[in-house]
Amino acid sequence: MKTAGINYDTGFVIGENSRPDFDAATVEREMQIIADDLHCNAVRVSGSDPGRIDTAARLAVHAGLQVWMSPFTADLDVPAMVGIARDCAAVADRVRRDGGDVVLLVGCEISLFGSGLIPGATVPDRITTLMSGAVDPGAVGAATQACLAEMLAAAGPVFDGPVSYSAGIWEWESIDWAPFDLVGINAYRDEGNAGYYEHLLRRQRRHGKPVTVTEFGCCTYRGAGDKGGLGWLVGDPTADPPLDGTLVRDESEQVDYFTGSVEAFDRAGIEGAFWFTFGQYSTLRRDDDDCRDTDLVSYGTVAMLPDDAPRDPRYPDLPWRPKQVFDTIARTYGSRTTVRA
Image 1 (cartoon, rainbow, N blue to C red):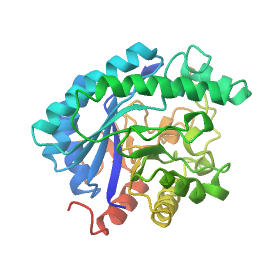
Image 2: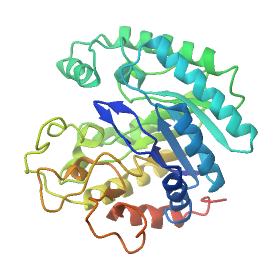
Image 3: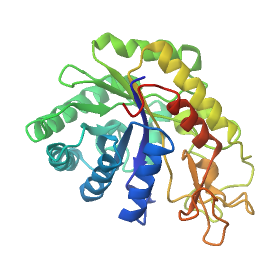
Image 4: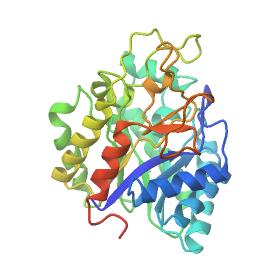
C-alpha cells in the first residue's frame, strides 16, 4: 500500500457530539503522534464542522501528512449535504493552495447517514429499516447516485484537486466511479463477508482507478472482529448504565483485525487504507465498571481516560492511553518503505 493512513474525528452528532471538546493544541499534538509515532503518511480528517476540519487539516499538513478531507454528517437532507460538500471543497482548496497535499471526499455512506434516501428519521431508524429487508436497493442506489451528482457539481468547480467518496460496500451504494478520480470504500470485514472479502476488494479495481479503503477496523471486546462495522451496535448509549456488563475486553481483536486486513489489502492490490479510528473522544475506559466501560465499543487506537486515572508514561500530557493496536500499526506502517516518503 502506498497510503498508510488513519481516520481522525473532529466531531459529528448522532445523538451526542462525538467530540464535545475540540482543542487545537491537542489536535496539533495528536497529528504529530500520528505522523511520527504511528508512522502514517496520510490522515482522513472527518466531521460536520468545516471550521474544525480546516483547523485539523492545516495541523496535519504541518506534521507532514497528506490530508483526505471528509465531511461526515448525520440526518441532513440532500440540499444540506450538498451545501456541506461545497463548504468543505472550499476549505480543501484553500489548504491545497497553501501547500497541502489534499484529497477531497465529498461524503460518507450518504444513503445510510443522510436523510431521505432510506426510510427513517434517524440513523438507528434507517439501520432498523435495512435490517428488516424493507429496502429497494435499485431505488436507493439511484437516489444515492443522484445526490452524489449534486455534490460533485457543487464541489468540483470549487476544489481543483483529486475527488472521491467513502462508499459503503452494500449493494445500494454501488457507485458510478467514472466522475471520480479514485475509488474509496469503507470495507469492514465481518463474519458475513470473510469468505469472499478479498474478492470483494479485487472487484473494486474493475473501475480502472486506484482503490483506497477509507475505513476498516473493529471494537475492543471479544468477538468484535466478527461484527466489523456493526460492532458499535451494542448496549444503549442513552441508558444508565449503557452496557450490560457482559462484554469482555480483548485488545487482541483489534490487533488481529488490523493485521489480517492489511494482508488482504496487499494481496488484493489496494492502493491505501485508513484505520478507523485514532480515538473516539466521547467514550471512556473504566476498568472498575464493565457496564460503563464504553471504550469496549470504541474503534480507537487509544482509550480515553477518566480525569483521575494515571496517565500513560509515553504521553503524560494527554488524556488517553494507547491500546495494543496502536503499537501494531506503528510497527507495520513503520516497516513500509513508502511511509513518510
